[in-house]
Length: 332
Image (cartoon, rainbow, N blue to C red; front, side, top):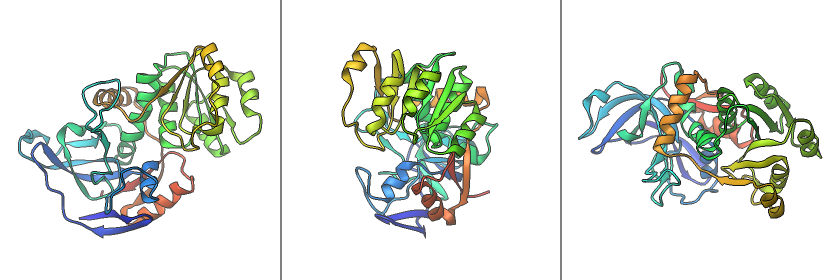
């Protein structure tokens, strides 16, 4: 079969590899579409823990079950499915166990014509979604759902600030907040991304590249009951200032590194909760797909490439040009 193969750091090629084989308890999914995440770019650039090469990257995928392994109900044959990329979460909702991993490293991922996967990692494809939308959903949708609901416990009518709108997870956080009846606000470095966020239901947005933005924006629209962040870095203190007393700051990344200092006096005096999160449990994934189906949410697909154009898709994400998910169409 044809697949995207990383043979080393910054070494990407479209290659032919052996067809996957379903082990007991597994199925083969013929993939219709897959999607990129920043994780794939970091793996390609050698900036991710546990690197091994060669590897087929990709955590997001949707397709049709074409083969079942021993012990799998034959009724799975022909089903349209999406793939849960959170493997071996473990037994507790509060956090993943040490054996937890994410599809696409160390296990070969979805940027291929087919994949073998434990049947328990599959969920029905929401019927209202296209293949491209369905492929865009799993990793970012799961991460956003756990962050916004399972961890931050966002409620209707609460104000939520989503920092760095434009990437897939932040877009889902916005869509989920709107669907839940919350009052969302956003930041970005791009006027175009702020405009897209407004079209999705953001009440107001601000360019965090403008000096003093946090104080002015907070005076006009804050404080915020929930703050969602994936950047960390020197701007994290501003998010503490923007949080309401008793508020929750939930974060799932640190693309700008660790904060130089943490304003602990402000945190304890305002009774803030700092909530770390990553990916989500099987229960989170089931709740997320049910929520998307019930609310009729359509993932924001920013760009679609063919499998042969995978290098161009990676380049777009590497320069931060995406607004919504970057999707790879694998087959019709």
